[in-house]
Image: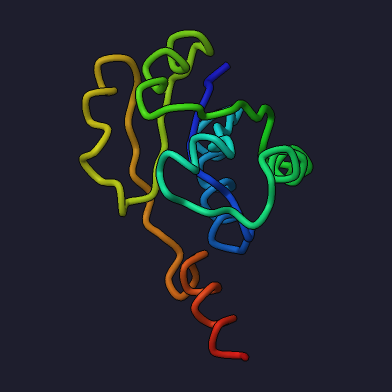
Length: 130
């Protein structure tokens, strides 16, 4: 079985997230999604609308996702890859080059972002509505 892993906050879920999850799943037989905990988001100065537990519940309901685990710090990726027996690490191409050191442990793939949508864009568009 070929295992794939990806990471993110996955707040304000949109079709760009779904495209990433679908394409990541197509690279293997089993998709693990590591989502940033609320505490880790605080460290990153990132504010999520939905709590970790609610984001986890949403992701677990998506057919492409087989397992959801917490991302608690920047450094855990190597340990997750080894512990979960991961074959492919996937991130959006806006992170290209940032995780190349993981190539020692598995294949690293940077997928193109979906054009025209992002959580940042949604937040900006909602502010314009007021």
